[in-house]
Length: 271
Image 1 (cartoon, rainbow, N blue to C red):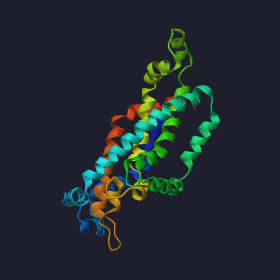
Image 2: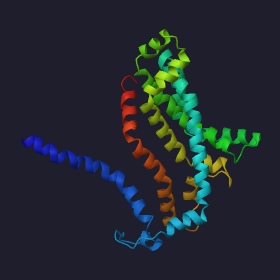
Image 3: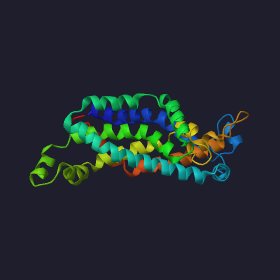
Image 4: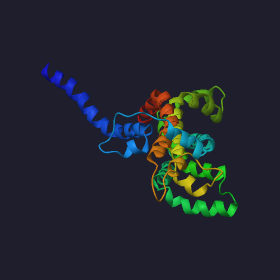
């Protein structure tokens, strides 16, 4: 009884001690987005203040926020869509035909720092005249999204019994038809997981947009960077832009949370 009481009290305290350090930067960013510059840099920190929307107005009016939002949406959705179109068949092939060497190569590509691809991409796109284009950003973001799709889905496909598509092929379906009509519907949690993770990674990417895009195709993370200058940093604008950028990713994660958890846990059965 005493042990059970200690567990009921100690476990929530342990969880709280782990969560608080992770939540504190997010809470501080959210509060600072509604503060004036004077309140942000004041010492001791102010936790009670008069909130203002001035920082969000500056983000929308001064930083061409709607253009950045459109660019980020186009790049993220297209990168994820093309990664799913290529990654799902590749993951199925790896899972069913045990192509371990190919999966290792894809993992190596994912583990390599993105900056190592930056100079080759810059040379190729500049020679082809594709700088400041959606094509350049979409292809570069697929370096992030495609390995995520392949690795999540290959583990998930391995957890689906091979007999499922074999029974469909006995009834006359081709392998492609069995994949589209049986395997993909059964893999919806895994597909949602891969889509959510790859979308978040693409949405938050800063490096490729900073180098490969200019005025026409810059994405949302550039809005944060634009509030920093040599002379000063507009912390209110930085925090407001960061909140605006994180909002879609947080909403997407909250909406598909149960599918993401299910997809990751089921994919880990045999992966």
